[in-house]
Image (cartoon, rainbow, N blue to C red; front, side, top):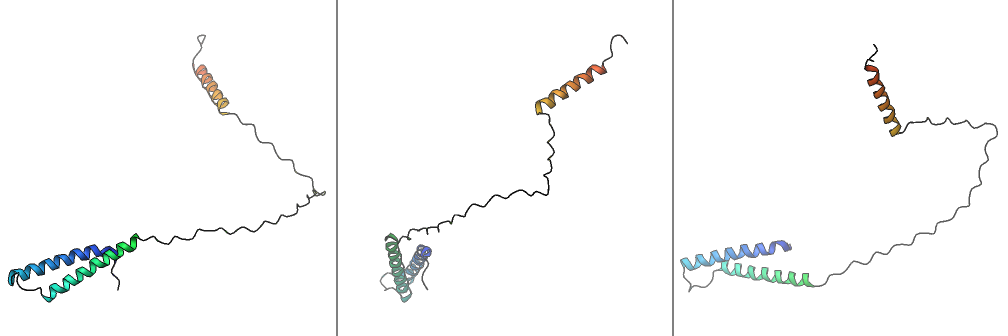
Length: 132
């Protein structure tokens, strides 16, 4: 099973910690003169393998990659021009109905002026004249 690329640095770091612990344990109990144990040798071999794999992947990443081929559009089929249709003649049996005209509407300005006039008239009507 291949090793994930993103996990190589983490694996190297963990391996280094285990290797350091194994070396410290050997030095503490047996001294520096004794050769490395089988466990230590296995950790060293694994570390070397991980570093080689990391270097190999970095070299592979530096190489140029293949580019995707450029997309080529397929030319559209030519559109067939249709012959113009003959105009239809109106039916003679029925007469066309007359459409009702749209109502005349007041513009916004006219509506405001009318409203102002009605308010002024209401104010004048509410005031009592001096004669009464």
